[in-house]
Each structure stands twice: as C-alpha cells, then as structure tokens.
Image (cartoon, rainbow, N blue to C red; front, side, top):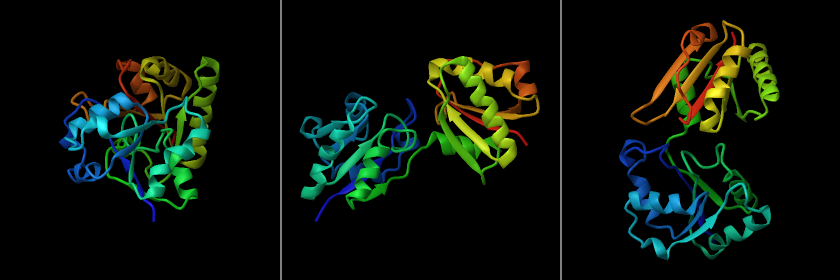
Length: 235
C-alpha cells in the first residue's frame, strides 16, 4: 500500500487565500506531513496562511528547484512507499506547469503512485481564457531566449507558426525582463498581429488587454517587474 501525491496550488501573488484557493484544500494539507517544495521558506509561510494545524516544525520539506540533482528525486518520494501522503507546492500557481515539479510527477507515474491535482489558479490558462484569442488551438513556449537577437528570432518564428497553424502562442519572461521583451515583440511583429498582455493575474492590480501591435505601439504599458503572460496570435 502506498500514499498519494497531491499537487497543491498556491496564490499567484499577495492576495487573500479565499479569493482563489478552495476551502477543501485546508482539509487536505492537515492530513499531510511531507512536502516537496520549490522554496521552503515561502512554502512554510503559505501553509501558515492556510491555517495548517500541524506545527510547521513537525513537517518534513524536500526542496526541488533548478539546482536539485535528478539523483535526489527518488529519495523525495520515500514517504509515499510507507503509506504517507505527500504534497507538491510550487512558487506560484499550479504545480507541474512551467515548474520543476513536473519531473517528480513524471517519476510518480513511473512508480505507479496516484497523482491528484487540486483546483487552483493557473496564470497560463487564466490568461488564455481572458485573451479572446484562439482557445481551441494553443501552445505554451515557456521562456524565450535571453540574448536579444535570439529572442527576436524566436518571436518571429512564433508569429509565423501562429499564422500557419491558427494557434495562440503563449510565453513568459522573468518579470524584470518583461519591458524589454514587450518592446522587442511590438517591434518585431507585423502591425496586425494580436498581442494579449495578462499582468498581475488575480491581484488587485490585474490588467488583461488584447490589442494589435499597431495599437500597442501608440502607448506601451509599464510591466517591468510585474508578472505577465504574453499571448500572440497572427490571423
């Protein structure tokens, strides 16, 4: 007999827990003592906000981030094999989506462990829902290249692919590079290509707008250091 792996959603920023996290998740975390987390400090803070009954110091945390060696993954799941449930918590939103936790989920399936995704906010899907762009055919391209010439080349490639496949192209960037990415997008793409900027999703400062490049060029918003999802479509 083995435990289960719960994929526990978190908020997308500093907002009230009850605005986007279902109440039933509080019951689930109170049955879990073992967690795989991207950042232990923020995970502890989040569990306190959920009013976890178990003392935080009695919980066991395994840190999984971009620096974690794949050789450590198997050891993370050991509690499950002694019938202990585990929770996977990412830094923001839904675990396993644009998140290193996907590797542990993959391993769980290989080990025939039951994986249970819990309802919560996903910035990617919320942005697509609100964009008005093609929600029947879309692709997530992750992060674009950092080097400017490579980034511009990727933007043009995604624009052409969007036109060819009638497909919404979704991507993101580290918040402190958002403004540079936005400027490259509006300068590299055709004037009639559509761009949706979904910024600060679920927060009080949330702003989601879809315009053509021609329209964006008239007045670029300031999105520097503000979490943003970019959605591109050329019809």
